[in-house]
Amino acid sequence: MDQINFYKDLLKHYVESINLLKDSLDDSFLKFADNLVDCKWKIAITGIWKSWYIWRKMASTFNTIWKSAIYVNPIELLHWEMGLIDPNDLFLIISRSWETTEIIELIDHIKNNSNKIRDIKILGIIWDSSSYLWNICDFKIKMSFTKEIDYNNILPTTSALVTLAIWDLLSVYILNKTAKSNNDLFFYHKHWDSGEKLKNLI
Image (tube, rainbow, N blue to C red; front, side, top):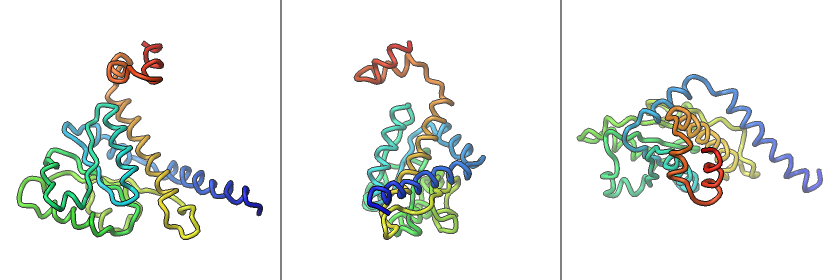
């Protein structure tokens, strides 16, 4: 196989993984999404290492559609920043790893807390359905994908794509459910290309 075809072939894992996600979606996705729609406070999203950049993008997308969201670093939460979390929030874990120590310690800390934060609802987008994280979540979506595209099957490549696809579906679901008008959208996004497009739709 020549060099360019080798890289073209890697993209097949992306296509196959998106199809795998498509085939795996069921009513659990709708229940998961409805919890996000019904959240009246904020959605606290947590993950670790390379995932940090993805979670920041996710929180930003939710804030764009009037669903208050923040990214919280699990290590910082364990070191005196639990005041960021309210019992009325939703706590969303996203994990490609099997058992991430920092996330497990954080969840154990929340669940064993003496105040009402232990009752917070936990949602998860999790790769391993036999993991502790999967079992501890109240609602979850399985992160289905074939393999990462690097030769060690380690770099968050395919898994990142699938996670973003799940998040985009959730974002569109929320936008459709909350039924914001184009006038509302234009009020908050009147600048740059987005504003011009919305202006023409009003």
